[in-house]
Length: 343
Image 1 (cartoon, one colour):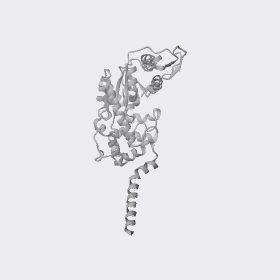
Image 2 (tube, helix red, strand yellow):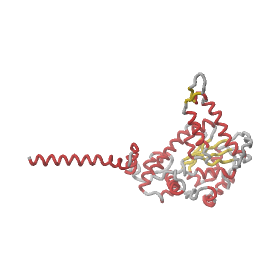
Image 3 (cartoon, one colour):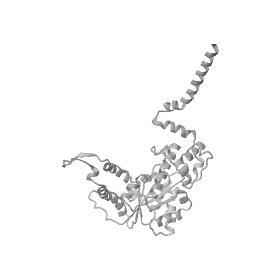
Image 4 (cartoon, helix red, strand yellow):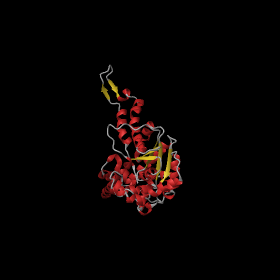
């Protein structure tokens, strides 16, 4: 099975730029460990589609965007020496310079596969760059992959313990990050009509049907056989067989719906569902823990630790201060009573 790396070809500096083609650019976004890679691999199997896996393009452009917006002042020897970058290079100029760089990446990917109509880029974190993407590509498509956050949390914890230390491992951190992504997705959906959500669980249950719906949304005319073949080629068993060749060991997890029931402790489940709050049900999932609407002590303790970045010892002292004050008050009252009793 091919992926983005299979289609990449080394280019010398003298290689001419690929011809400009009218392409659809689709960005797969979503919370990490929600199945975005699987969706990309499914789409890579469809005729007319080329894919680009986690290119980090807009992560790289972020630094340039910050440079432009920082308005660093410098002397340029002009009659008015102190000018800022955004005064010399306005936003429209910036877009005209940066857009060809970003577009060249998509054009180069498309040029490797004749007949490409759609280039799909899969970087879950691109949700945080959706404004920049829309600024450069107002006609961009966004495919949002949604998975039960409890299953995503289990997958993220396994990854954090094995091959990706950058992932959070604590339920409270995972849940807060999931809520942040949900809010960003909602904001993005309000800014463009080219936004489509697909549930991971629906793809598991009826893959060919959901894949056909996504293809139609992208404007591709495919046969039922195309979608069935793509789903069969990207079964979890086949992906795991090829795992060692292309991704870290353990990258493809259980690929199940509801596996969290056998992995999460009741205390971790309560923390997750409390922090997720109404976002869990807004995404179409049902609470399981009967006390998930009341704040767990672990959340309160975490908030104390986070207070002004204090050390745990200082946070513990703050927590115990009212107790100490209570004992001190009663000790003084007792001493006062004894003193007056002797008199």
